[in-house]
Image (cartoon, rainbow, N blue to C red; front, side, top):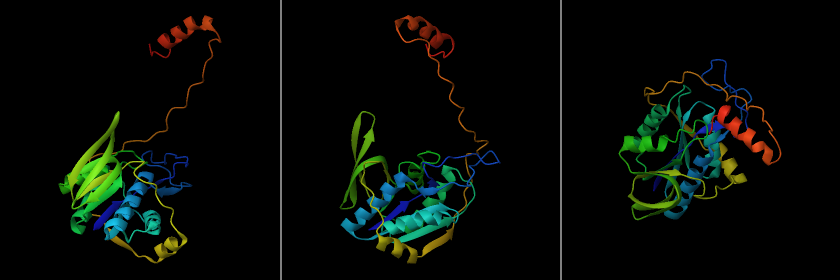
Length: 248
């Protein structure tokens, strides 16, 4: 079975992000990066499918040289091969998806896995875009997956419950938290990952559909106000909510 997993190299969730001098990107100085957590569920699911059905897991990322760190993490977890589509330029989701889809079309996977969204821009578009470009069925926010006999059964989260989806392979699956518990790389896996070559390819070009005009930090929180400590404060509280906060 040919299993292809998309991964992204994103700022650590504990990093304090600052806007760069250009006003359009983040300042990378002092920022720690990591494998996007939802993509980590996708990697783990790919490894589990390989263990059950045999085959290979290829992990794919688009970006600059730094993305090799994330590919190494996936290789240390047990993936067979890492591929970097090299392009450090700023791209929107469409442009990224176009390059990923071009590689996937060439590789011909039986299943494509990725996180439901990346935790940098939270666009949640890549999986659906790639599926559309390849003409494949896709299932998002998947929390349970069974693959057997050229088909899959996926359980996905919906508002107020879960939904069961049946699809034929090949297909694109977008992982949600709860799909599995990602493994920690073993010492042997880490050492093996250092010896595994990462294939570098030039990312296919595709024009972006979205242009970032500016980034800015959220406005600081306003100072709180205490209007009283008993029932006598209700009238003033209602007035402030109506006249100042304008929520009623």
